Image (cartoon, rainbow, N blue to C red; front, side):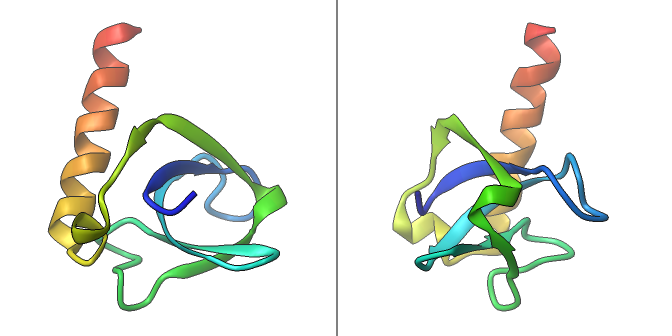
Length: 83
């Protein structure tokens, strides 16, 4: 799951899109490159996210907040075009 995009289903950030930067048994660590940089990811239970399987980032891209921001921006742009 690391490198995939996910949408938050619960909490104050419901509907927000993140990149999964780390995975544990019951939870994932999420980053968006701005409010949640790679150095300070958000911990969220797996049952509280919805995976977006269309986009997968490489491990090198997960180390950089700027590449995460670009991937999220590109995904949002593609969603606007398709709707």
